[in-house]
Image (cartoon, rainbow, N blue to C red; front, side):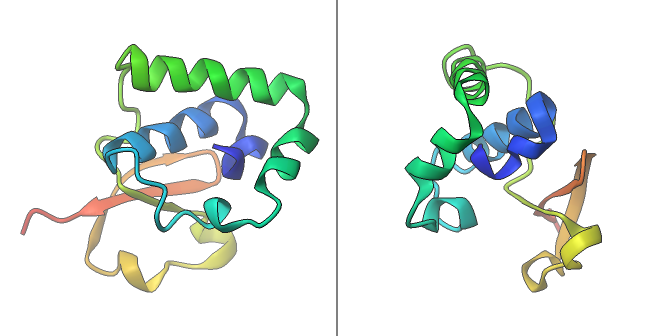
Length: 106
């Protein structure tokens, strides 16, 4: 969820939904590859650490609503362009600066 800290509650919540939709796997998340991830998270401040913990509880323990409509991927398309992996995926939501995707059923 640290990847979306600049998006506030809504963006962090949406990323948590994507993680849940992937079965909890962090494989493929750029933020998970950061060598200084713990340091980065601490730098965000206690407010965002507490917010992330609250969102984690809502999404994973309380099975809160999926605001991404089943998305398994996301990207800031306006800033970085549409990624190659999204070519055959459908857009499920746009939350903050992020566009959310999932595989097409066809």
